[in-house]
Length: 620
Image (cartoon, rainbow, N blue to C red; front, side):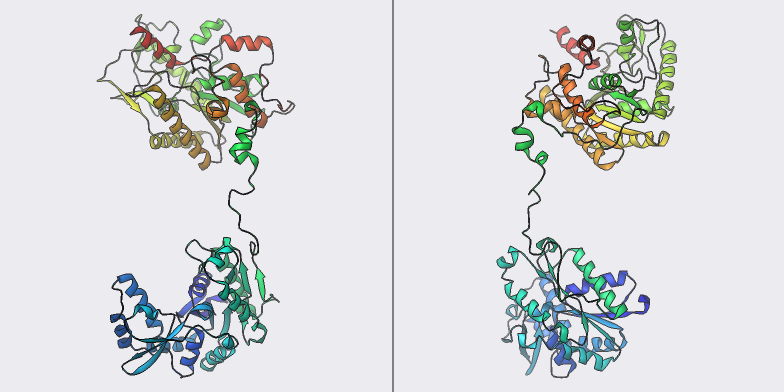
């Protein structure tokens, strides 16, 4: 059982990494000796010198360091202590108590040992740079290859102290790749392979010599590896300790990537991931693979739409294509078409009008579920009462404030039903700029005083929502929606329609780019965070360079119906209802009949924001 297996570590950080993993698997760490070559330890165990520094010797060498840097002093003291007589005695005592020892040969492959005289006594020290000491020393070089077969002597020395101890030798991996040439590591590779040739002569068991690709090297430096290498070696060590055999593992094993040229992460990517073949070379309307759905939408799934003006286009095309498009506030049979639209019927899945911002969305949800309420009512220019949260969908207005609030509650009940029953919620993020009530925090689809209400700077305040705020508010909405409807999936889009006007003291073009960029970044973050949130790139398609604003009308705000059709063709190419042909020509119109095309042309999307243009003309 692993819980009573006490082990020692002898060698470099490689053995230390494996030791950490052994502890995690229930083995008991009992001590370590580091920064020491095997021949130096063998001499010490055989009482032939080595590991002979006293505490005073260590401090004497530290006092003669050329550097006064605290980190350098700390590292040097640690290396010298490992070469001390006190450390040797400690390690010998631990050998007597341990069940097995793991050690590697990194220091034997490349580290030098030196001889220094202190108070007339010669001391052999390994893995210490005496060039940084103000004392004479003798460089004894690296371990000669003639001694690569002496590991059996090291094993015998351990067994002389503890006849029952197991000995697990970890051959230090070698790394393939051009980096070896640049760092002059060819000799180390050759010495590793030479050591491995003696494996069949060893009295103890060892890991194979792993040859790893450069991908397995840590970013720290070439002496450290990725966790996968340490994990693999740990598994082999455990197998040796438990079974006493290695199941015929070969002398050398190539891990994936060895002997293969390291490729850049950008090599051999699909064409869709390179700008030239994906964007610059194709005819713009022949660009494909812009959208890959995250989840399916079936013909039974109830789909609701909400958001800014562009979402109206999406809803109409979903309905026309045969999707189960939700309309929780359908048009009364006796209501004329133009009057129905003026009252907000058929624009979205409920009569909430345009929901431009994340805060509007959260407040709409909270109001629908009774967590938030406002008794505010506006009056239009004729003195009639209107709902401040959909001021342009009240027709000729109401005769009293009470009537507005009564109709508002009926509407919110329908909105609640929609959120509770929908399967897919399509939300088009519109703008970041909005107006709020300083006292109540209520947020509106349009600035008070433009079409209804009276603007009072003491009551109303302009707010331009930032990235962090919008992300937080959208996360709030997603969380609350899941609380009432666990099956709900969300499809986000960003409206490509520019701002009509900006309340920021800067060019409207700059405000538009800032607003849309923030919304796009939020949408991307939500897409990455949540499996039930998808993003459809309507904004990206309309606004990207290859399309050269071809989808905009002359005002450079409104989108041509053909542009909407092209955008939605990418959606329908992924979300294809059973029985419908997969669209192959993405340049083709989405209209089923000429009558539908005429209807779309006459039926402009309703935008509260468009009234801001009237304000400009009024003031001219």
